[in-house]
Length: 371
Image (tube, rainbow, N blue to C red; front, side):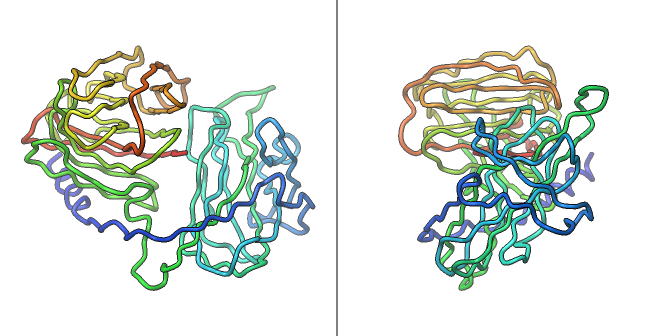
């Protein structure tokens, strides 16, 4: 255990400063309105013939043929309507329980980067985002999106298995005007912006994002948020409006405390007594919905029936919050609450604490889906 602790701690020490603010312009293309469904000739990179997409109006999405052409790639093309520039490309996909489909985007028949795979999920057709950074795109370029039909061989159907269809709904291009003029790596912190230590804790929060594994590691101490003063390590980003954040969680166990914990948390601010909503999993397997509807008040708690949750999720819809927990590949147990006090810019992200101000705990968050 000590060797593991040392290895993880060294890994966490490699921190990179957040990027400076950029002027951003976003160009959007709709899957069903801006792309042609004409079948592409020849064979895909997996050496199977291409198959056509079809429109699924229920989801406003393009989908491949899972029944007659499993594992085949579908392809659709459109013309880039933006200006010549450098962009962060975001493909809006729909995750499926049946399989983790692979996607890629091409500019003038050149891939913009490695193919990316949808994260595993306990949801059906839940929105997800796949991103490629620092992509040069000339005006009027041909944009091609490809995805496969795929089965993870976990869900039975008609004597065989169900297949995911590689669904996607659109693609965004965010202009990065000064990307070439600086050392640029947006993904040093992944989708997040800051890693902070909240409250009076001797253990500073540290994080590391392993891009190749699509996994976040977070170390922190503190006593959590069960009273009216919080202390923990927090990796977060600012957001306004509705969202979904889902992740697999695994407490590594640097602390000997059986109720050290980690989870997803939305906060009104970084004040130690701020209003918040969280889905927390303890090392002993207890999963809870914790929330403080009013700053300075004591934390309230709802205990999940599921023990040893491995997938957790928070969804915000206006003043409604759906907090979910489950074992991997099982249906979510959901708890819903209504809170009207959260306004303006909010903080959303990962938290970890050891239940001690002098000890540290580590956690990994994988298969992250933020939308």
